Image (cartoon, rainbow, N blue to C red; front, side, top):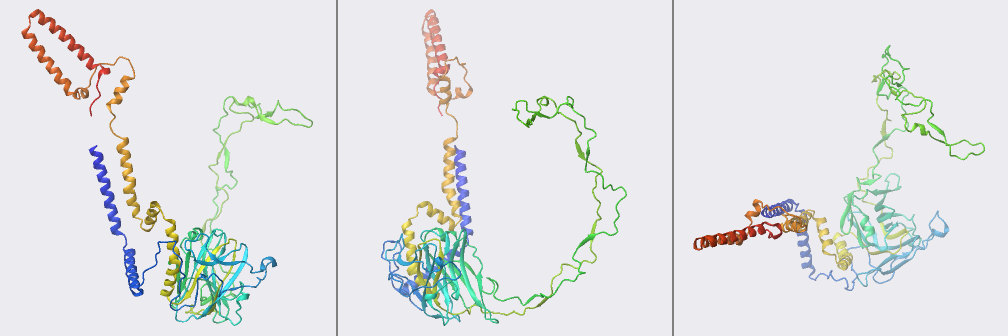
Length: 586
């Protein structure tokens, strides 16, 4: 028992020491960031001098976010109308007339399972339809010295099978007509989620203008490393944000967390700038160009003892026909039980006579590898003295080369639109916002999406287990604490309860199960565990027998002593009997 207690103390001590070590070596970056963020939040609260909204009460009446600061577009749909938006009346070219129209329905309504009464958004209502809707900016956005921030919310209320939820920033042109908004309408940037099958995408595409030819070419951002599956399947509202900076850097965020970033010059496909040199299309490989690194040795001669006709296998001359081999018996015979028919041949079955024999039919020696087999002779390979390497066309200056070091200076845009085809309905859009000020965008997100996220989180009310798992995902060292506080005590409890010495009562019970005679033998352990009361009683009996023997007559003494000795022997026999044996005290 003491050993088990010591083992428990040692294991717990080691576990706590390991936990302290892991926590001590954890990078404090997150803690520092949390402290800084907390200080910033406190300063902002002091400046605003207003209490923050209660995010923990999902039943509070929703208040539409109000844009504050410089912005180009802001719409929350909480008025319940499509005021400021234009439905496309156009038809898509190159497809059947039945599906060419942009007749997909849009509605302004609350989410199906809303946690904020009064919070309305733009909902794509139709399946397998073309949808197009757009709205003008307050003023065109010109890419010069200010950053571009585009953000909006999406909720796939019924999931998403195949379809998109991306926005297009429509280029500023003289002939821009929102009622004729189609897939071929010029756009500057396309940004947002898209999914078909198991391909989860988050588009960032911009159209770059070739400074030499004036042609526009789509440039696609690299694919995010993050797993995007959850954002399409959890049926929660997510905030999508694109940040473009004048120094050509970009960030793509979901729920204000960066999932992709890079530089327009280095992280787009195809690259912004073409190569300075290209292969000469008129250059051709000379006919005498030798690209073979190895050739057969022209001076090699086949050895005289090389036999190219030798077979690869030969009969084993040491093989002996087994005794009892039936040479005259065929291996298969016609089935004698088969029903005979016209022009009929009985099916073949194994010969019963061969079942007890080592074999039937003509015996042949087994084949073995021919030790003299060498195969067809070939000259050995040597380095080619005339090897010139792999031929490549020569390089020439690229006639289409240009160098655009400021791809951020894109075509200005004056409208934002949704041009979508989806096999899923009830896609919820809300809180579109375009600005050049990061703090203004964050405020808009906090007043809109932040309140919505808090309401959704409060409605879920995660249990203790889910909270522990979420905490461990952020801080993996917590798994060690869980193991030490849950698993280790459970193991120790099982060890203490299921191990140890067996009670002597079980052994006595085994004796009681049978009436067969048992030997009157007591081992040393039983003698040591003899009850103290019985030992004291034996001593008193001995003293009384000595006193009585001195005061009585010799005849009476002899009879009494004989009687007492008989009783004592009977008691000893009874005490030694397994049936009267008392349970051993631990």
